[in-house]
Amino acid sequence: MISGALLLLFVVYQLWGTGIAEDRHQGALRNQFRTSIAAAPVGPDESAPPPPDGAAIAIIKIPRLGVEKAVVEGVGVDDLQKGPGHYPQTPMPGQPGNVGIAGHRTTYGAPFFNLDQLEPGDPILTTTAQGRFRYEVIGTTVVTPSEVSVLDPTDDNRLTLTTCEPRFSASRRMIVTARLVGEAAAAPDPKQTPPRTKPVASLDDPSLSGDQSARLPALGWGLVFAAIWTVAWFLGRNRRLIARAGLYVAALAPMAVTLYLCFEQIARLLPSNV
Image (cartoon, rainbow, N blue to C red; front, side):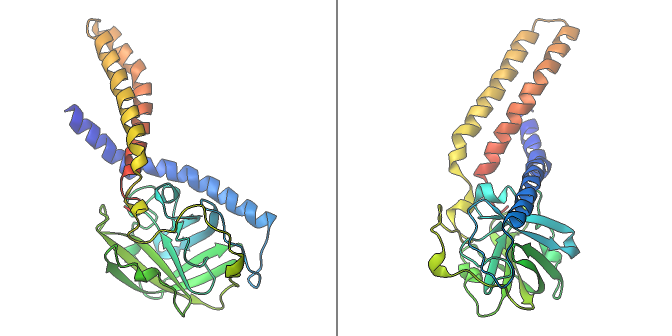
């Protein structure tokens, strides 16, 4: 019964609890994005240097889905927990070529939960330091994670959105392609592009399969939770009903906190594109 209850609580955390963390990150990213634009405004004819990993680089708005999210640079586990992530090896939104953005389908705010509902002609709006750009959907496909060609450079100016397919699984990838309407913004000089601090990721990159460094923290917080539960049970075993209830209520808060932290680490072990 205890194991079943913990599994049920983890499902609740995955579907709703992760959204709390994502919402907190989104607030910080929006503030960071507004501050960066105000500090260093860039016009569409001026080239913007590549942003650092983990920075807020754009706002993406999908009217049909009611989605408006800050986009973070990178598609690693920690990046996609904050919101949709920009594939570092692709151009910035609005710039020439094939722009790639990945997003969760069922956890961490699930920004791409209803991505399958997009139809040809639907607008996707992006705002960067270089201005506002409109894309229109041209098609949706489903591919295997090894089909990395969807992120290859293209002669036309397009936006490629990727997420997991089906929901609650990372066995395949849903790809939504949209074309840029109007002129593209200036791209930075490749010779002036600074080296990145972490490798770029693709659809089948190991970083999309979970962060294995979270195993020890998950185990540690799990043991702390178990220790608190054991102590509360031992102390309350021989107490009267009223005293026992008070003891359990007092232990509830630290148990909830440690369980949340344990679930947070376990979630890092899961595929980041789920």
